[in-house]
Image (cartoon, rainbow, N blue to C red; front, side, top):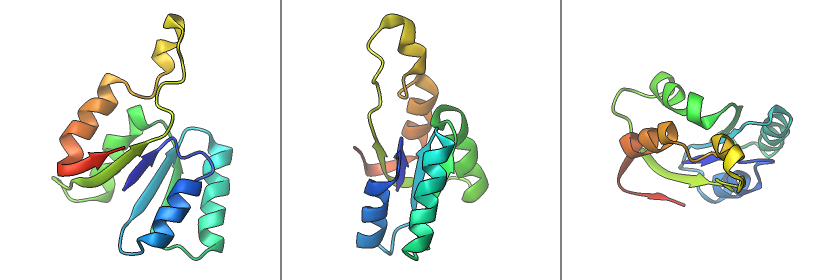
Length: 115
């Protein structure tokens, strides 16, 4: 499972505890939050959870390519607060951009879910 915009990672921490058989990845653009969330995961002994400070639009596809064999699919993806920018001049800051949609459509397995 990949959680985009995970902030302090509370949703990921809960999911990783409830589903120890899943690998859970949290992506957060704000480094301080991703680092704090990773410390929380470490303190809870969650070996199935990692947080990364990066931009999902730029880094998600290369991360998947590097971490998993070619053709690997995601079972599920959650997108937290994807479009908080309502003014037209801020649309470029929206999380849900064409590169991310392309990556998700390529990598989400048939029958997988996007929340």
